[in-house]
Length: 349
Ligand SMILES: Nc1nc2c(ncn2[C@@H]2O[C@H](COP(=O)(O)OP(=O)(O)OP(=O)(O)O)[C@@H](O)[C@H]2O)c(=O)[nH]1
Ligand SMILES: [Mg+2]
Image (tube, rainbow, N blue to C red; front, side, top):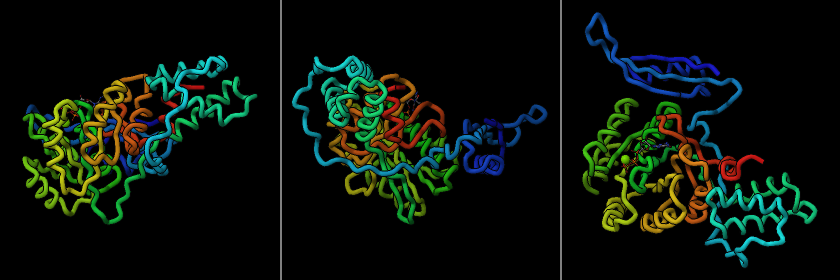
């Protein structure tokens, strides 16, 4: 892996230098705005981009990874398991997998259901074979993780709104998406924030918009939101940030709903991977008052029990679009991949 610092008068220029040297597979590790000190006086602004390139790893940017095949969401809830208790006749190998699943925070009834599915797909002679059981369970879990179709830009404008509880990482995720789709994928991106509750909230996104070089509109009312969208009509992608809402505050949820009525946008519900399964149910039921199209799961780096990804997928019944894995903008985001998520949940064979 090669790591190198690139500079430019604008962030675009610094990224361009990185592209020239590392090509499309170079990834941005860090961006910063600097002022040079010239003989004790403040010099002109410079932008710095630290990039990395691994010749053995292709297509490593989030924008380039937007190529996962679409899986279809099954209709209606899955049929309940007739017997949600672990079977005393299970082999030690199956019992081990059961405890792995429950340790990953997968509810007991779902764990039993998954293992029954595995056993029904394997011949009896394999029921004590650790490797074969693990492989089959991986398949079963990956098959249940529904991931979203890649974002395509075919002349139609795409408008995406991020909603969700407070502090889950909505604004940071918008910054990651904005940087990847504009700087890496070269798309025309515009930003809107309707988070006018805290003074610092709009400033947070404004800083990112300035660094990346993107237009940002602050909308204080549904009317201003519509005006903001109209002003960004030349943009291929509009990303809209909202204020975090507690799932226990019905008034806030109603207000959010009112803001987006009649707006043709894809609504992404953002949930942290550190959320307890019971709270995930509550969040989905309350935010589900809005028409949720996708989920984004953040803070994968803050937990070692990844069952919440499967649980969210089962409950929300919409595809997972992205997962985020750290505070770093823009690099800590990935397009959701069913196999990779199944591997995280189950751990190594
Ligand atoms: N560890 C980790 N931290 C993250 C991730 N994404 C965001 N954060 C951090 O979570 C904190 C809150 O992030 P914000 O983006 O402000 O969250 P928000 O949902 O916009 O918050 P509100 O607007 O107040 O509701 C910040 O410290 C982020 O750096 C992630 O994937 N992993
Ligand atoms: Mg925010």
